[in-house]
Amino acid sequence: MIINRVCLSDSYKYSHSTQYPTEMVSMYDYMEARSSKVYDKVVFFGLQGLLKEYFSTKIRKEEVSQAAEYAEKHGIPFDRTGWDFIVDNLSGRLPVRIKAIPEGSVVPNGNVLVSIESTHPSVPWIVGWMETLIMKVWYPTTIATKSYFVRKMLEGFAERTSDNLDVSFGFHNFGDRGSSSVESAAIGGVAHLTQFMGTDNFNSIDYAHKNYFENMAGFSITATEHSTVTSWGEDGEFDFYNNYLEINKNKPIIACVMDSYDIYKAVDFITSGEIKQKIESEEYPIFVIRPDSGKPLNVLNVIINIIEENSVAFTLNSKGYGVWNKYRLIWGDGVTPEEIENILEYVTSRGYSSENIAFGSGGDLMQNINRDTLGFAVKCSSIELETENGIVSRDVFKQPITDKGKVSKKGKVTTFINTFSGDYEVDTLDNIDDRKEALEVVYENGDIKKQYTLEEIRTNSRK
Image (cartoon, rainbow, N blue to C red; front, side):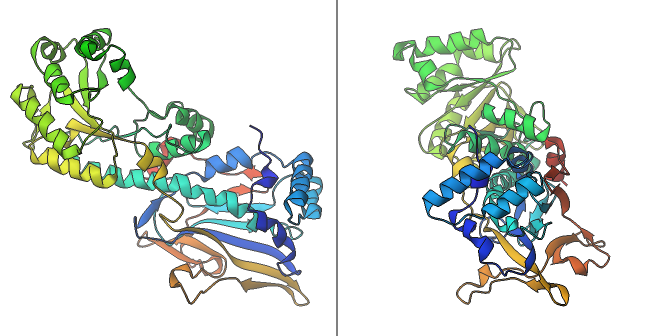
């Protein structure tokens, strides 16, 4: 699919070049996450992918001509002179400087995450035009943030109940099919992989390789779906389980959805008799039981009772919690962070370590968020004007009396790191003092200046 990049802004923005002061020669915007209603900090992620996908090559004359034609039919003005200037005089390179917090950084809400500043006096409005696309970083940042807080929760339970503190595979991405597009599945999928290593979003592996220098960003295992079980017929369900186990002999781990008919009979079968002896031997894989319907605590209560009645082998860890030797659980139906906590509280209250169960999430992880989840905003905060007395700066801000939460920042604002405390602090560029600016130049005049590997991003989010 060929994208016309000149079309990647809101319709009304194409009329703005004539609305700014005629003497304006420079424009400065910033991005922040304003809201702390859900999460009080963010894991910044995703700008690099957007820049590489859309702004790493020159704007072409054909794109401008087509956008101009669309604009006329669409009923909006179009600054053909300005766009032609970018193509003809600037070789199609967008005249902006973008600075950003290092990807993967965990930053309290309210700090400046990105700044965008024009670099040529003839087309300063290009900064406002870019807002629509740059704003889309809200999506991967919000998913990375959600996954970060789930990871912290899983680590908390692991510290309390497990000798194995690695939760890298505790929260699996099932969200490709539930995403709004192929691209959103890829972008959101890599955002989740900033915090975890498990995913069934195969599409995201390619995006991570192309945009974040990662040869293999995540992993999955052999698993069933209802059709592979039910294709054997109800009478052949147990034959399927035997066959499934045999064809995966000597593999480390397999998963099986077990509620195609009667999950309790299925769990009883798989945890008793000859098939149990096989699973608990060294030749066969760990068997992950996957319930996929019903109220989680009710279903898990019965399953754990069956496991106990069938004397499934377990080991007591140093913290006094049981770990099944060759069985695990995964819950992947209707999973939310709140449900994960409820389930873990229940499983550990039964005396079993949190490492016995993992979680999979699709719709909630990838789709149950929006730009307002973290209150993302991009606002103009400063312009420069060419006057008789030279270049002068003007603060640009809004201050609505109806919503103090939407008051915007003034001046060329950025985020600094306090030299002594290490805290993030918002201030204007002319008030640097002895502080270090946290934002780094990532894009300037058509060139990507700074790139991060997925490994670096993962490291940043764990500092």
